[in-house]
Image (cartoon, rainbow, N blue to C red; front, side, top):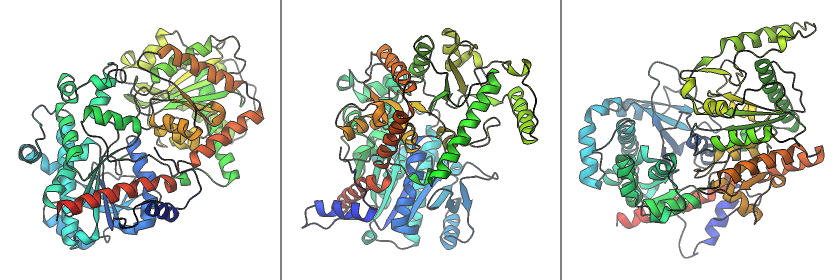
Length: 589
């Protein structure tokens, strides 16, 4: 993996890349970029972060020749991430609708505000048998055993391909325009294959952020890493009942002009399970426009976040923990083993029993689960407290007010709390947030979208208030959550099974420690206890830092985040564009 650590602007990065090429060959750059993903204007996971934080960098370069294509779920409801325009590309939109494409055109409400096209794919569900037949006849994509979200994903993918085709033809683009389509994850593979077949003048890139079969092996508690070279991807797809998703992913990897993934560790996975080594590694970056600036605004945001986190925790548990409390958190998708949630909870329990711990610790588990709504008892108490504070009412705190509200471990109601893994593990470990415990664990099982009913703040507006974060992933192709943490100057703990953790080690040239802003723990198929103890010991160590040491660790986190800005990592995309366009040129000779 190549690392750009200097403070280079985008144009300088491009020039460095171009200069490094054989000077007898001109670098090939795109005139138009189409990107399609299930997560365009649809905040769901890490791919949303990849696209939304990189968009401004591309938009600054190509202006409105960068077009994102996503699914239109919203029907008559307003999508808060999408601002529709009746005038933008109006003539094309009219023609596309006449041709049977039900689309909306507007701006994605993210930095850069790029053009977004949302397509209603539902009408194509009626044609799914014909579409799947086409995929088999042309690319041997086996959809026979498809189930679940496969039908929606591939019909959306098919519709996205038609959107790109429609735009290309309407504006009379040619091969000289060097248009590129980049499809993300298996859900959009068919768009790339469709374009390969019907608009061969467009160069195609497919990016897998995590292979279907690799995620399935890990998620089914099978050892992935020790046996990676022994696994047969097709055989395992059959065994784990993911043949259809694996098939379309594999065929896209082998048929696009440039196959990419997001880290070296996933590149090895692709080589073994998809029988295709990536043509390029597209390392994930971040855009620091999400981070409050200048210093006063940052400090104010951090102070507000800590106040909110402590207020909710104290209200829930009936405590009076102060600002010297160590606030820890983990977050991301609710993939219990893959994201390391299980080892995080275990480590917090071990820290709870460590007699050398002197400070109070609140450990938040911020992962969306199957929840009903905000807890009304907690919500109403927070409202009463807020009104009292606003009116500056002063009175002595009664013992009743210091009593926990219901279950002091969770902020929102779950549909099936008896089947929830976090609650089950807390019960198993006998973690009940009793007053004498120095470590308290609070489960926040909701999307922190600013309207959850309890915190009413976005995830970024809360993460900035933490002291340290923990993301001990077992399966993590890159790892945006630790990168987001350091971007907000919060030191984090991750593992070397995450692409980000490996990158942090490479930046340092040795295993990264918490003093470096990132603690990268060695993780394998079988060292759960070792990882748990190392997390516990690292948090204990951090809790003993003086102010100077804490500030140094926070500064180190900020510096490593700066090295991962898109203005550095965008160069990998230029390399992928170049390779894709060059391969396209060979195809259409």
